[in-house]
Image (cartoon, rainbow, N blue to C red; front, side):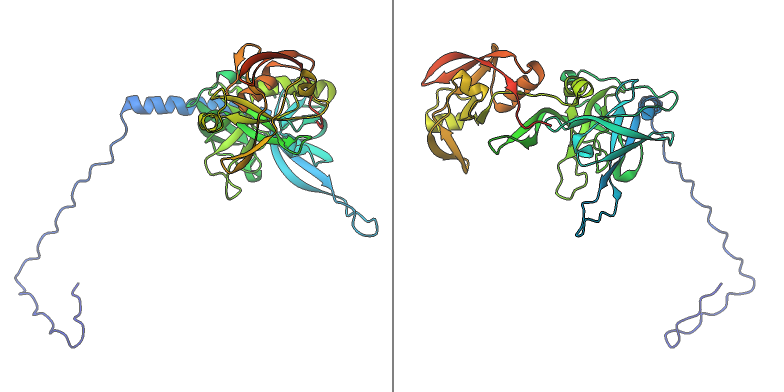
Length: 385
């Protein structure tokens, strides 16, 4: 085919002589296909893929979507438009009696609950107990889909950074979604409920992961590669409200302590000392002449608390450190039951995982430059639900 010239720019080309043979078409080049990965690489990847497929097949039936219904508040005239479904979360089967573990914040405002299993079954559930201090709660169903088995809890003290972390849950209502990442950090803490003094209790030993967690995942399991529960997905750190690479799970060892009490009594009593605290660090110690470079500075002793009964002392000298008020002059806790305490997170972790209400503990403190030992009998944290 001959292309026509653009008008007014150039004359048409002269026709080719009749006896001039047409040039043969050039052959298409031979293109080698994209090389595949070496068999040793693909075999390893396929083995990992098969592990996840098998894990999901085995674990998924025990993971549920939780639908929470709340009553509308009454409007003027005493009229209430009735209940509405207002929230969704996730959970997992804890035992063969129909107990389901989820987050407290998933169920705390609910009046009625139902759970949706992976096979599509929807079963009404009742609230057995909840604990704001660990953000854990237990629901119960009176029947289970055939073949549904509970998940096993791992020992979360053995969780290490870098190990595989697998989340299954209900993000944005997308039931039984699996995401995979790694354990990004251990020993984190999350802000918990209000304390009597107006501060905040903390949830210790929290696991950090980069497995994608989004609204609706709360209460679902975080699993290791064996399909054991290492944590209960509970929160994300985000500027937008959706996942940005940092998510948190309440550790399985907290589940092992709290959930049996919720099943038995509907509540869990956290051991309590009754102090305000601030971590001591080397710069603080140098600037204010403290006798140790690490420990827990007692900034407040609450009235009628175990700390007051044990004779712990708070400070009375107001300073500013790091842009925040600091009360100096109080006892500095450096140990508990013979173990070193370097910061508040270690102190809270020990209390939560190694002690119970009514236990008497031996605290090592620094007071006026001298090391002392103080006996304290732990009470139940006030204001629990």
